[in-house]
Image (cartoon, rainbow, N blue to C red; front, side, top):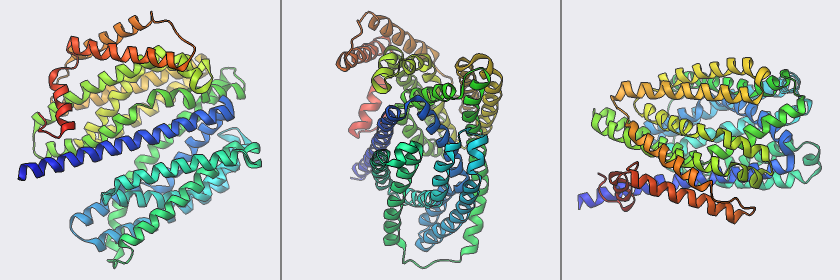
Length: 510
């Protein structure tokens, strides 16, 4: 009876994780549809401007939140684990006060500096309006972050994901309406920011009501000790996030500037940037949302194995996850390489985007394997090393962009992107080998690559078609052949399929 109950609990955890993964996929799919719509309305140049503004906006949001979401999750979870509901409310109250104060300062700074930023950094005077809209709603975004931390700690993640999906769909609906108004015709980027901000505000108010209903009447504990604990968390977390996001923002801002230094005019440089960052990257990274969900699940699993000093469990999970990730990534890379031009035309009506999808496709295995490796390292308490690697490779990327963009154009961007991400993966996988003693099975990787190459070679003889149905058939043919070959060559073995089957059927995992 006890075993059955345990299995039921583990099954519920699996299906909860599956639901969260599906929610993440749905969010990414909605975002992808929105990206396609925006590209049709704005064009490559407009999409490039929007991407630059979003990059600056993300940095402003991180600057305003100062790591408060993770702090809210940790503090609330600690207090709930000790059975102190008053402590949970006190922690969230401190996070609210801290977040609103910090975000208000950041909002005032961004609002006053927006004309300067738009002229000097973004080199677009019309960017001041969207940045001011963003500044006004920064405190709302910070309140949303605190509430998200609370709902995560309370185990109500499914409710949170549903609200995020509603917020995303509502945001798209409002943006579509606003784009048809005078504001949208005059400044499409302002319409996008305003619609998204209104939707976030409405969902934040709803979550605030749910939070107040849950523990709003619980008495508070003394605030000072909790505020000290909060600052101990937010200061290092916030500084790390600000450094990483600041470097990423700098990388993005350097791209159009570097292209202009190479001889391109401003409009062409922004359009090229929009094509790569607003069209190509969303396509090649879309399937990775599954891996990021798995990566999040690996953190507690690896932490448990480390706490129990179960090195065999850690090595077995590392081996299986990396092998299956490489299989998945090679299949995704094969699809992007085979159908890149068709995807560019169908999604964005851009042959140039399709060409770049094919060019960036070989990088997919490195990007996806790096995501899983980071999740494993986090579970093994190697976050400090991950921060070092990310900072080092971001600095390298900035240096390479300054050096290569004026001379090589988008080819220089590709070279910088490839070198920095390959180095990040090398450093991460090297650290993983040192910490775990894991020895990768390169034969499996070689077999998987062989299966992908053969599948691509065979499907190249399949004549291309002009309609979507023909493209889907060609892609399905590649995947079926790829899966068949991985089974025949042993790239995926019986233990892997048994592990997946047992997991889904809720039997004992081997």
